[in-house]
Image (cartoon, rainbow over all chains, first blue to last red; front, side, top):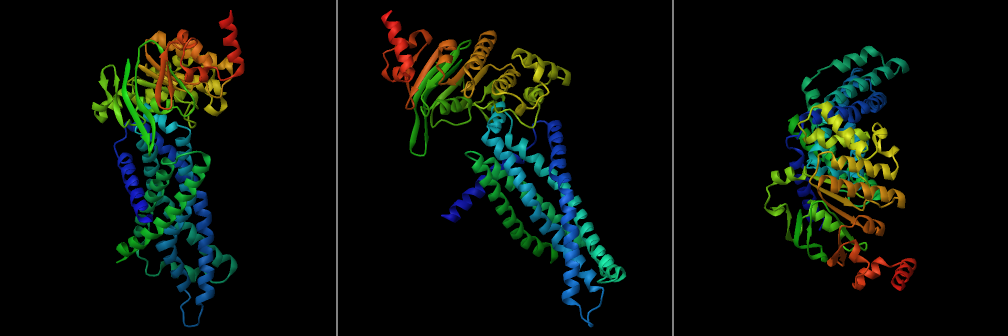
Length: 249
Length: 253
């Protein structure tokens, strides 16, 4: 039963995406909506991304320093490991998990509220492709903002690690800098950006799907928001495994 | 003119509409009345295309919706204006932007022309002073008037109203009813109103359909309705003791 329900849900998701990924009826209105969403979903997320990344960068640095410190281990390993964790996983996958909570629930509740107050019906009656009108600007906006968020997250994480080294004295900034620069592979940044773009699509499309299919009232909107965040998180982790395997081979 | 023939609609195993046929003429305010759960909203949703009937045909001025292509259906929807039960104004937009929205999407007008048209619609419903307000700043009656302005912005041929008076006081209800009726007569459009407000029935009911348990139980106008022998309709109309006494007094006179 669970498998059949999941297949049905996936089918409904594909049908919705077919409507979403069509040509906008008015490009001028599409770009206006997209700019609005860039601000709401992307720019508004910058503070939380910077804050969390800064502290996680600092914590990773402390943990590595405390747990692998050994006379046999070069001091620069702390900076090296911190950089690799931030670039490879934190700034793409974990940051997107955090964003799925903030952005995903925001999208589901917004579209879900429009559904229960008949605003989506009003769009359909006018002859507007409501799925395309409401969802495509959100997907485009988060996809276009995600590389910027990833870069900001990497920078803030490294700044956090550097700050903890400088202000607590657990290691010298020079050792950290050597580690941060050691065997740097540019492809890791591209991997992170590619993964995050994929996750941006997952967050916006899945959250929109849950919001668009709400039936009932405000309690159902709340339930849909929770379900959307859970589904987005699971899908991000699952697709992270596949993408990492594909991109890092 | 809209014609529906033998409309059937079921949800799971429950048959909500059982072969309804009716003709809705131009320039008349057509009312669909009935108890809650009688199938009024489902019938209206089938007519406007929000739901597909299981069987039966719906014809807009001799254009059958079932034989229309997707493109033709989309185009035809631009000839439709709809007033929803809770107004359904877009809360991210101001009142003026709400009224301009269908024009922005589908009209070839310039920006200034669109603004002028939207203001004219707001003036028609006496709401021009609220053009810069957001929908949540408006009272229920004002929201309904703004929704009427949005519905008529594209000069529709067909106007649908789902419970336009729900949640409104009797005086405001009268204003909304009169506005819908005046617009219908002025523009010669086909208007269908779902209601269970008896004031609306007596004020603007040019053509009335009474639905009971998914079937068309009675059809007539506001003059006929008080003298009907239809027991189900009488039970619905005179459900309150006061109204029953008024009817008996008028009969005695």
